[in-house]
Amino acid sequence: MRRNVSERVLSGLWRVAMSASLCFITMPLWAATAPDTSKGATVVKGSDCLSCHAIDHKVVGPAYQDIAKKYASQQPQIVATLMKKVKEGGSGVWGQIPMTPHPQLSDADLHAAVDYVLSQTGGSAPPKNAAATGATHTYKTTGGQPVTTDFQVYLNDKPPKVTDDVFKGYENYNSYCFRCHGGDAVGGDLAPDLRNSLKMGMTWDTFLSTAMAGRPEKGMPSWAGFFEENDLRAIYDYVKARQLDLVQPGRPPSSQD
Image 1 (cartoon, helix red, strand yellow):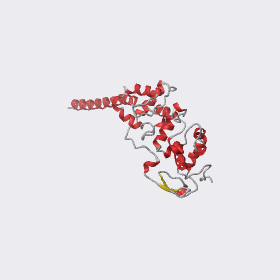
Image 2 (cartoon, helix red, strand yellow):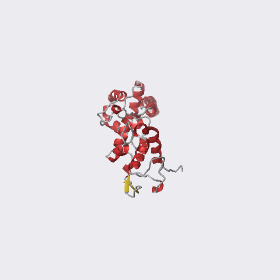
Image 3 (cartoon, rainbow, N blue to C red):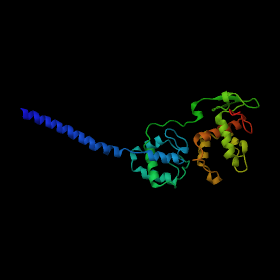
C-alpha cells in the first residue's frame, strides 16, 4: 500500500517535472521565432517610405496594413519579391504612380523593412485628408463672391488672418515651389500656374501623388522624403486659397502678427 502511494507520488512529480522542462525548452524556441521588427521600423522611418505610405491609410502608395493583408498567404516566399520591388521601384501592382527606387538600402535593411511592413495587421482606413471629414467652410472673395472650401482658411473662420496650416503652405511654397511655379502661386517660366491647374480640376489626391512622384520627363523632382503628406496638404490649401481669391499675393496675416 505504501509502495503504491509512493509510486503514484513519484509518478506525479515526474510528470510535473517533465512539463516544467518542456515549458523551459519550448519558451526560448517560441521567443526565437517571434519576429523582431524594430530594425525594420528604424529603416522605414529613416528612409523616405513614410512620405508615400502610412500604416493604416493610403497616402500615395497603399497602407502597410493593406500590403500585409494582400501577401499574408504568400509569406515567406513573397519577401524576396518585395525586397526587389523596394530596391528597384516601379508601378503596376497598386496603381500607375511609380514607387521611387531605393538602391542605397542594403539587402539586410531591405529584408528588415519588408518584414516590418508584412508584420502590420488590422484593417485599413480611408485616405486621411481634410475633405474626408466632410466639413465645409464658406467665405467671400475680395469681390464679394461666396466660395466654399473643404478646409479652414482663416483663424476663427474670419479674415484676414489665415490658419497656421495655410501660412505653413505659404512658407513652404515660397521657399521651394516658387522657383518653377512662380512666387505667390502666379505661375512661372518653367512650370504651370498651379492656380489654373486646380481651377481645371486637379484634386488633392492628384496634387499629392504628382508632388511625391515628380515628373522627371518635365524636370520636376520627386518631393518624397523631403515633404510629408501634411506639408503638401498645407501647400495645396494655400494654392487653393490663392486660386479662390481668398488670399492675396505677399505674406498673408497670421497668428504671428
